Picture 1 (cartoon, rainbow, N blue to C red):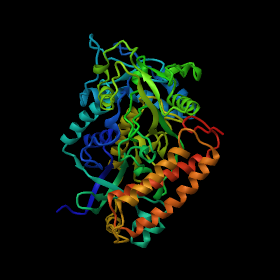
Picture 2 (picture 1 turned 90 degrees about the horizontal axis):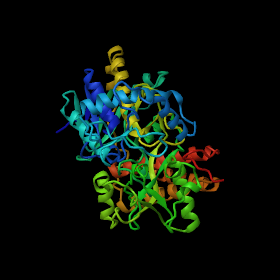
Picture 3 (picture 1 turned 180 degrees about the horizontal axis):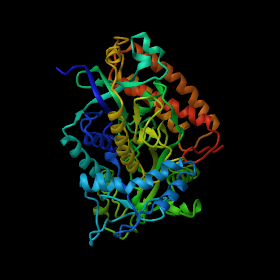
Picture 4 (picture 1 turned 60 degrees about the vertical axis):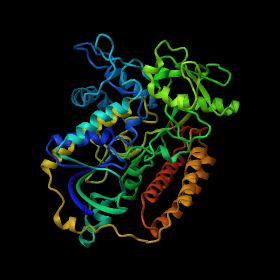
Length: 532
């Protein structure tokens, strides 16, 4: 039987592009890494679902310089100049080299190429030039296949599946020895995690902990995200007193497949609009030029808000994306979209695709620096759960996978250096951390009760903290979420812990934090669209 207590040099929670990139970088530097994920495989998160691709460079002729300055301008424009400029420049400078080294040379990701062997680059909304590498419309899946194979083959990386992170361990909060309560600097010591196979919590102590837990989309009623994306990293960081930032900026993807009987929204990649597809209203009229001179290729926040405005004014439950005008072989270029639409009874070659906006990418999160360091010693955060300031008030298309890769590799390089310079946890501190104690033994996680709480969270967030926000809606959401969080907290303490309950607890706390941030920011900008 596996021990319920481990001590490791590095703990990585999350196995998407960010988690895999940091694990490989650390392992290559001679560090032993324990990589946890909540699913059955490394590719059970949002990274695998990404369709569009990853930013590379617009000019790939031999000896040509990357278009770093043009990309920087596009990111700042999409982010409404709310971005952290140092983070933007860091991504633009480091990006192409990271893609070359980790994805093209090492993972051998089979990005699409032209007949002459050059990369087939596409363009998406907000970009001034084609610069996006892709594998048809399953780019994330192809990238995760390549990275997963490298991770699973590395002798210094141990992977544990079906582990749900519960809480971060910190010296000030968890250490039993009273002397640690007087230390000026609090320190992260690892995490309590739930073994979903045994149903029992495990204590994983670590010299260094890296959160790569993904996004928050599933706290909204309509979302393109994987089921596990309920804000686990943000909720745990908040409880540990770690600084968060930009929590009000939830990006809604303009084009998700509309199915009347389903809240799960399959993504319709923005690359379709990049290659000529047009958004139409219920009468078949192209409307985006009424809102922005960039038309269908305006940044996502502009398009999503325009779509909501059209639906509200006409009463239509959805709008349409017309791909029939595109001069390409749609099934071969967009096989994932074709399959998903076909299953919903839509032939994209001849029929317009019914689409609606859906919660897609979180631009806020755990505040980090350019190396992924957080405000808590011993804790890093990378990927969608982190807020580097890169995206500002709205994310530019296809920056997400690149951010995860660049910060994953940069974090690994920084931490490998620190491991060589700094000592690990004192043995006395390791011994002072207790194993998880069940506060309550009642088995009250009734699926009906949990489902009702989730329905309250998701409907509240969609209706009051969604694409269009007002003071009245946000105040109503704040009051409702405050009461629900209190109820769930009490429920959590009385009930024997389960994965279902942990995810509800994390989701409620994350939704409450987003609502608080949205209420505080009275200036509408980007994804935080205040109609009042």
